Each structure stands twice: as structure tokens, then as C-alpha cells.
Image 1 (cartoon, protein in one colour):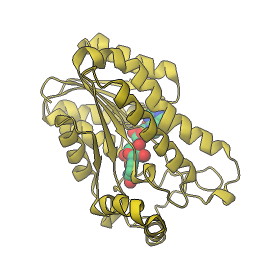
Image 2 (image 1 turned 90 degrees about the horizontal axis):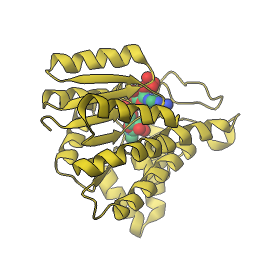
Image 3 (image 1 turned 30 degrees about the vertical axis):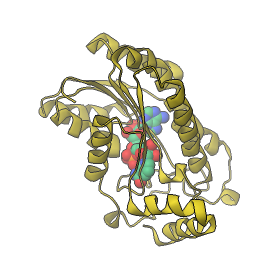
Length: 264
Ligand SMILES: NC(=O)c1ccc[n+]([C@@H]2O[C@H](COP(=O)([O-])OP(=O)(O)OC[C@H]3O[C@@H](n4cnc5c(N)ncnc54)[C@H](OP(=O)(O)O)[C@@H]3O)[C@@H](O)[C@H]2O)c1
């Protein structure tokens, strides 16, 4: 990763922030984006302390011109982009029939799916020039249904379909497309998850101490980028579940239901 220009969206917290710190230690040049400028600046500073050159761009990935500005910032500062990590995302925690205002599903789709589409579109000329890596952070909920996550699961399935299709279009371009499917990772994403009233639920229903740590998750992503892997399904349960889905789909439904009920 030394001297590679890596753009990470959603770099102010959680997986994106830890990915930035680990890549900083490996000598990458970083472009970090998120809406919250203070937290983003703190992460940028942690990366500089690890020896990295960093620019922080305040951006809402749901807005196409913000995504264009992230990539022109990268081009201006470093002359191009070698890796784009489409990581910015939000989630929900509510059964479909309990949701009071369905616009939350549109917002989730706009951030998780269209945000990745916009950033990818504006990064692609640079990625083609560098023969770089395009990364999508989806979720196991992007491969199978999960109760309380209808809109989230739909947005992550949309990402999977988009990037799998684009990979075929880019087959002769020199650009690798890497899809990441994490299971539960201990971050603040669930406190901020939209509840039935559209407001953050504030208390995570997941046993955060018993799920994958953010350091391990980021390490697996760094490894996947380095190897230009097609996809990474992160947990043993996820890997077994996807095989089971082929032969006994109702069994994976039961596993997903139990995971939500047990919070891990
Ligand atoms: N944690 C898990 O269990 C898990 C599992 C599977 C997949 N994932 C995926 O991994 C990714 C990162 O999740 P995380 O757990 O690290 O979440 P997190 O801790 O909540 O961090 C989310 C990041 O995305 C940014 N973000 C949110 N909306 C944005 C927007 N409209 N424009 C720009 N940035 C935005 C946030 O910053 P601002 O709020 O400052 O903008 C923050 O930096 C997400 O795509 C998530 O779906 C997470």
C-alpha cells in the first residue's frame, strides 16, 4: 500500500476510521471523507501521527457533487486515485410494518447504494489510469435477508448487484472490483440505526462485546485490497450460511432470525 492513494468514504468512525489508521501505518496517501468534520479531522490527525499524508473532505455521499469533489480533491492533492473504498453507510432496526415514514428506506438507499454509485462514477477515470482497486463494503445482509433490515438489506443487495455487474464491464480495464461482506462488527452503527420513527435507536440491540472487532475487520479489508480479491465473506457463519442458502434456504432464514433475536 506504500504511496498508494486511497479514498475512504465514511472514514470518521467505525470500520472506515480503523481502515484509515491501518493504511496510514502502511504508508498510503489518504483521502478521508464523511459529513462530520470534527471527527474526520481527529481521524486524519491520528493517521498523520502514523506518518501518512492525509486530506479530509467534508462530504455527504448522497449528494453527487460532493462525491465529485472528493475525487477532484484526490486528483489535486495526489494526481489520481489507486483505491476507492465505498464504506459510508447507515442502517435501520425496525420491522417493516412498524415503520412510520417510509422515506427512511429511500434515504438508506440514497446513502448506501447511490453514494457508492456516485463515488465510483467519479473515481473510475482515475482508477482506470492507475489500474486500481474499487471496493464495496456491503454486508451479509447484502447476500441474504435479515429481519428488521428490509431497507438496509435491499441497499446492500443493490450494491452487490451493481459491483458484480461493473466487475464484468471492467474485466479488461485493469481495475479490480472487491466486495466485502462483513457480519456484525462492533461499531456505533447500531446506536445510530433508524428505528420505527426514523430516529436513532441510541442503544445497540447487539452484544457488541461478542462480535468481530473493528481492527480484525479492517485487517481483512486491507488484505483483500492487497490481493485484489473478488470478494470476502467475513465470518465462518456467513460462509456456511451462503452454502446452506443454495441447498436449504429456509435454514438460513432461521439463522438470520435467531442472530437478530440473540443480538450476535
Ligand atoms: N458494523 C457492522 O456490523 C457492519 C456490518 C456489515 C456491514 N457494515 C458496513 O460497513 C460500513 C461502515 O459501517 P460502520 O459500522 O463503520 O458504521 P459507523 O461506525 O456508523 O460509521 C459510518 C461512517 O459512514 C459515514 N456516513 C454516514 N452517512 C454518510 C453520508 N451520507 N455521507 C458521508 N458519510 C456518511 C459516517 O460519518 P458521518 O456521520 O460523519 O457522515 C461514518 O464515518 C457501512 O457501509 C456498513 O453498512 C457494517
